[in-house]
Length: 245
Image (cartoon, rainbow, N blue to C red; front, top):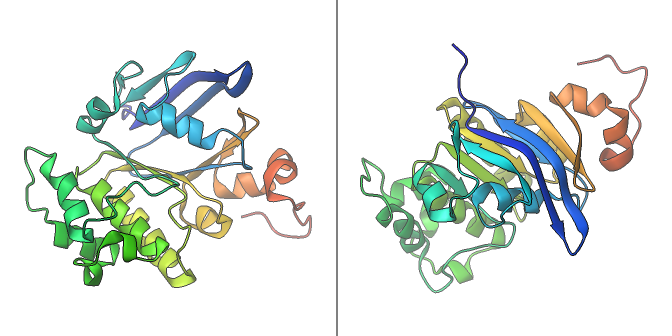
């Protein structure tokens, strides 16, 4: 039996003022995997995230969550179906504490199960900041609070937009371990990130966008060797003397 993908993007195109932001993009995220989405600035990554999460209606194409067509559904309906997202620009309540920000996510659930705001903050590594006003937190820690709030809905699919921005090397390493744990629990994780070391380390598969078009997809080893990706994004040619992974 073939397992349904957590996410399927089929032939999605978006134009703004006659300029193509996305052109026939196909992408899928499987349960139990961390999937990377990379590309240079302006490649269309955030636009694609907006389409997947329901903030942007595509001109053509479909978005399916767990096999269900959600192309015409709004953000709240998609969240109830198990889609959570963090943003490149933080979307937190700055005047509230870290704990209260996460509690907002929990309060949106009918069945909270055993989840608590403090427990979720502990899971992402910022429980010591539970009572601090979010606007006083360093950017990296605030991003982890946003992730804790995303986990409050117990998502099947998590979209992470630049989650390592503002984190130091140790925090980035710990976040990478956490994302692998979340995938190992059977969730699908889709990650936009410019830190290629973490992308190549934790992702099972990677999709590459350039000028709104999907130019490559494959395992980290395949992406590193792809000449189109080298030219468009990585910026260095592979060493022919280096053994293949």
